View 1 (cartoon, rainbow, N blue to C red):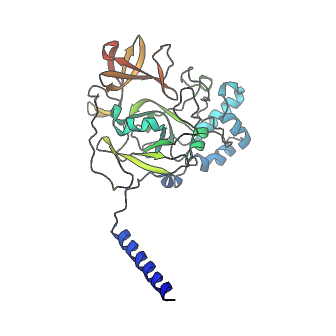
View 2: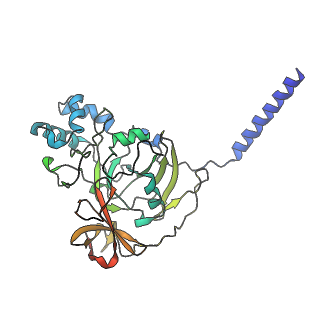
View 3: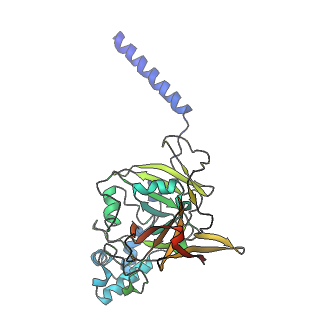
Length: 339
């Protein structure tokens, strides 16, 4: 009995000690735009039934049309899926956006390469809040495109959640058949109806495309996500750059000045002040007589991207719908800003 009493006292003392330690422990900054935060946002899932009812479309037809190659649909079905897509609420400057990146691309942002700018295929956080695990993200967003650096059985992925003052510049990536002007070189699993060709069985998810690049608003966050969907905050965009967390369990760090060998002084992409007015700018150039967007200069090399699959042996896949070239500065001509 005495032994049991002693053990009970020790246990109570230990619990009290732990409570005291917890009281003194400074909670780490876990991030504002977490997955839990996105669950509170209203997205396509909440409006889907109402939209389909308005367009007199069954859920089954939507599931088929949104996940098919739009060129394989009948003209009346093409019109119907476009009408549905046009009913999806468009992003604006108060819409939380989301971009999925591969694990290998996380350091590119954390080291502020290309000034931390974001472009390419993007969704709203609310529209894809149901997707968390590697399997769900891979299948739901169709990350199995040619040259993809995502792996369904890999170690996870990265996600950027951010607000943008150029959200109204995002376009719906329609195929020519729906009146779009997206590149014919874009191939399956891009479907051309403005939805991902998800294989999860619920229909596609609305997607957008940013042909140019832009820095996010202050407070944007990068998370590393495990295959099971557990998120770990890695970086916060503050004072014009990404601030890196070396340890996920430390409080919000002071401003971190990344040391890189990049030179972006003459490369501007996104919203910039031009003659007293905020203007959307793209820095463009030519390489071997082909048009490119200039991402930046790194280690004396020009990093260029394009949405067209040019017949160049040095062209490589940057991400879905975007190809790139790394070229000597002397080979890049006609560098200029377009706005």
